[in-house]
Image (spheres, helix red, strand yellow):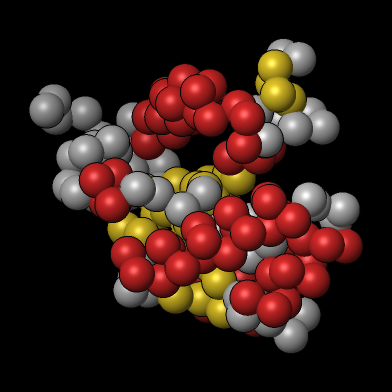
Length: 169
C-alpha cells in the first residue's frame, strides 16, 4: 500500500427492487461532500456502449464491469474523497478485507420485504426468473451484511438521512 490519501468507501448493497435508484436523488441532495454513485448510472437502457449488462445472461461480463467501477471509485478515493457506492449484493468472498476494495470499506444492505420487491419488479415488467433471482439475492444479502436499512413506506428523505448518518460515523 502507498501513503496517498484514500477516502473511505461505503458500499450500500441491494438486490434488484430494493430501492437504490429511487433513493439516489435523495442521497445526492443531502450528501454534503460525500461522493454518491450507483453502479447502474453508467448504463443506458441496461447497456454500456451497446453491450447488455443488466441482464442475467450478461453474467460473464459482470466482472469486467465491476473492475471498471473499481477504477472509477479508486480515482475519486485517491483524492481523499469519501464515496458511497450503491451496488448489487456481493459474494461472500467479496466481503473479506482487501478482497476487492482497498482500505476503509464498510458495507450496509438496502432491503425491503420480499412481497414489496416482487411488486416493484412486476411493475417494471421483470420476468419471473429475474424476480426469483432478486429474491434469492436479497436472502443472500440478509445473511452476509448485518447493517440493514429498510426501504419501505416511501419516506425517502428520512432513509437518506439514516444512510448518510451511517456513512459519516
